[in-house]
Structure formats: structure tokens, C-alpha cells
Length: 305
Image: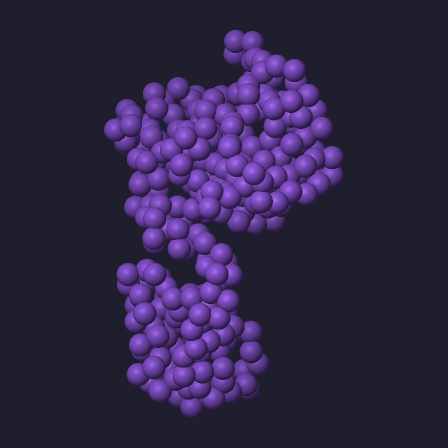
């Protein structure tokens, strides 16, 4: 078997699997199972198909083909040319679901969009506010807050509108759960947010979409776009290679994504409180695909499929 050095490769699934083996284990003649066709191009990593060929594996079982134009069946061809048996289409739909962010990014040329909000039993996101009144009116439980921070850490970016920053001054980090902070994205067309808010902290990069200026200071970048529409924002995120976005509010921002039909799933937390009046929750005309209780809250999942 050819001797292959892999310690400096970026961690694609194939490399992670090989790293998990004992140093004395041989892979020549082995069967490798992958959910996604091995890549064939140099990007952030060397080609995984070439790695499998060098290791001398006998069979590669592939869940689904890679629809990225840079791969698109070339990985399978590379393996077959090397005499490796290739078996395709095993649990294909399940593998596509597992890689849903990847497929959405390449097939729809936009990030995978998850909408999330918390609402009261009577359908409100927030209480009525007096002029300049700030502070968070909590709806969900402390336990659910930790779950939401876990969700944040699973996505590459998190997005909110201007009013959420002005009213609640969130940090948009995963401080209640161990994980990586997502890139923070704010829609502030006329740059009305003050300079001392939490989203400008050094804990994570921040992008502010606006219609006035382009500028970058340390970890914060102001990006001027002609119109702060969902299309323009998602186009810009796609250009930056951001594969998923977690949209947390407010009501108008969430409703824009629903109206424009540019969302993939929604997670709605319903707390045990009632406000009686205030800011109405977004309307999503779908039947939940799943729901469960979490502490005192109820969580509903929706899919656009």
C-alpha cells in the first residue's frame, strides 16, 4: 500500500474517518462508506477521491452524488478508473437530508435558511414598547435559551433586523452552550444602530447590510447594497461562501423571508406566557412536521418542502 501523509489535510469526512483509525491499521482492500461523493478538486482540501485511491481501498459506497459543478460525478469516475468498485444511491434521500445545507448552497445558490422565533400562547413576539424603551421581554424558559444557543452554533451565520438590536441589544453568540459563534449579520438600511451595541463586540465577525457605506473596522464590516431585500442579502452571503443562516428576527424581517419564499425550515418556540397585546408573531401557513415539549415550552418544526 502507498504511504500517504494526511495529518495536514483539512478535515473532510474521509480524512476524519482515517484519523480515527489506529496507526497500525491498513486500509488496502477496505470498504469505505460516505454520504457524499468524494471531491476531486483542490479547494480548502486536497481531493478526497485521490486520497482513497492512494490508500488502496477496494470499494466505496456512496449515498448521493455531489451536485457541485466542480465535482458532479468526477469523483466516481476517478475511483472507477483506479479499479475501485463504486456502489451508489444507498439511503440517497437520507444522505441528501444530512447534507441539506451543502445541496441548497450549490443547487439554489444561496445559504440554507432557518427561521426561528419565540412567541406567546396568544401569538405575540414582544410586548408594546414606549418610545426608547429597551430590554428583553423573555418568552421562553432558561432551558430553551441554551437549546437556541446550541442551534446558533450549528449554523455559519445568524441574522436579525435593526429593531432587534435597538430593542434587545443581543450578543448573538453561543455563550450558553459550548460551540463556535456564528457570523453576525444585521440589516440596518439607514445605519441607525449606535456604536456601543453588543453585536460589535470582538467575539465574532459582524456584517451590517446598509444602503449608505462600505467600510471595515476590526471585526465589523459595513456592506452597502442597493436594496436590503432578502434576495440581495442572500446573494451577497452566497458570494461570501456562507452556507447557512439562522434568522432570529424581528417579526418584519422574518415575515419578509416567508413572503419571498426563501426559507427552508422554521423553528417556533411557544412559551407558557400571554402578553394580550404587542408585536404579532409571523404567520407561516404550514402544518408543523414535528413538535415536542421542552421544559415549559413547546417547539414546532416547519419545512418549506
